[in-house]
Length: 91
Image (cartoon, rainbow, N blue to C red; front, side):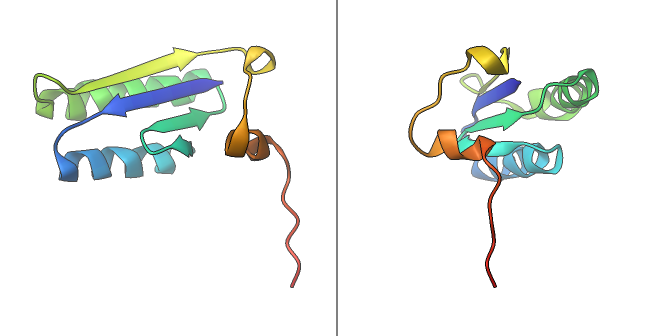
């Protein structure tokens, strides 16, 4: 599993970054924290987008952290625990 956390001060850039994470398959856990199924392709795509586009537009205090973690070792509480369960929809 990949966890991406960010702090971007510019509203437009922050919104665009969040949309990029969603398009890459990210699931929002908190306002600026996303979870991804870990794969080399996803990680490589994220790194390329950040390095080639976003990092050039960052202010001095902006940051992005990407954490790789073993899903079996992740401990989740609250709403985060429901992300791993299949949802049933009734119509």
